Length: 556
Image 1 (cartoon, one colour):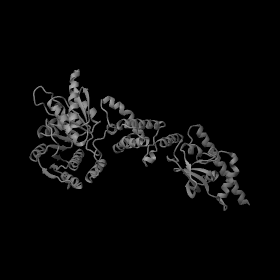
Image 2 (image 1 turned 180 degrees about the vertical axis):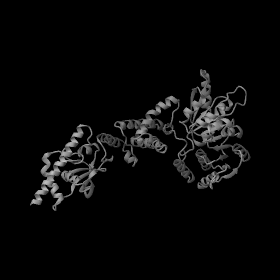
Image 3 (image 1 turned 135 degrees about the horizontal axis):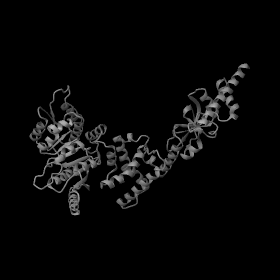
Image 4 (image 1 turned 120 degrees about the horizontal axis):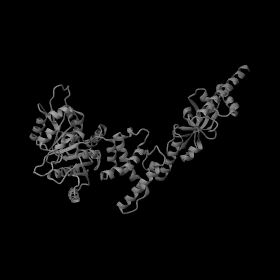
């Protein structure tokens, strides 16, 4: 009897201790520091249009995942501390039962996603938490919803998820494309996505000449507009610069800013190029390169996907050297099914007739080559303007030779060094000549940039059935594995045949000599990393190769 009285007294004391903690929680709430309140089940069920299952089963439920209640969400805090003194007798009785021989039956809960809501057993949950338990037995009734719910979700998140459910009801994207995740971090975003789909459907109808069904338009928008941009977001790693945001957030942000970028540039850009420009990515990343080469080696690349360069920036003028740059860009674009973005840099105050002549020549050559092209004009520093626009393309093409006839503009010859240093994209530099880019020479030194050139050489061999020559100029201090062996391993991994040469002495001499002896028509190499003062004093390796080799040089 005395033990029973002592146990009851202890239970009462525990109850009031829990009540004091609940009061502290209320005080902190008034100070704006309380954790979120207990969640009303019915509010979540209605918001997510959840459907209760008829079956339930006995499980051990983590107490931390119980975040709400069916009817008593105002009677307890989020930690299930009792808020009402009138609950004392019930709470004490449950405490005595749970710590005595009598025991208590399992509670009953609803489960939505990873969160649980008490249907029956709020006091048992409260006592169990005060006893330090981690799990409690419960009959769990699953509740199905199109959007998962988490114990960490707050009221704002519930609003967004409610909007997401409405969006899925209207689009059925979770059925058309299972596994698609279009979650957002701000309310109101799904109305914009619906507008995107509607506009896409409208233009699909114009292109096809007949009305397009809603489901067809939704799937086509996802496959051809949304998914490619999201894939670019993933591969570029750009999302790391936007903490707390989702892929869909960034898709919407890019869609909004794309129009501003296009207006400033005078070009229409595909979404992937906007991502690449914002991310500042340089060629494909190592993982993306490997996947592309794996697909090429396995003949698993369909027409129109997985190219070395989809968007080419060509800086040109109407002189003979400048037009060679455009011709070279059209050759590569035809092979790669790429878009060409032409850039004509005019002197201040250039007459309108000069712009008209340039546009007429550009459009005519693109039409003849069957290449999609867009032209823009700039005034000012040629290198600065090229560098500003280069990030919106995959490769830059320009002529760096001095004119062949007096009176022709010197193009970029006098600015080749700053262009080589500042270009954020691989540069296909033409020393006054063009080629079909069919017989590559890879000058490989094992550097980081040279690895991009190695990737381009392997890609070209696989995609275009080429037989490259790989050249390494020997240097003292190499370990047991020379750059030439690294390159050989890469080519052999993908089943590509190549010739391998090691030369000694001057790097530029070796590149020029081998290119001529082996009848090469393009050189691939990484940008060199000499100190700037050495470049200034002795001249740059790249400049010397460009001046002497007599063929295009792709500098990665």
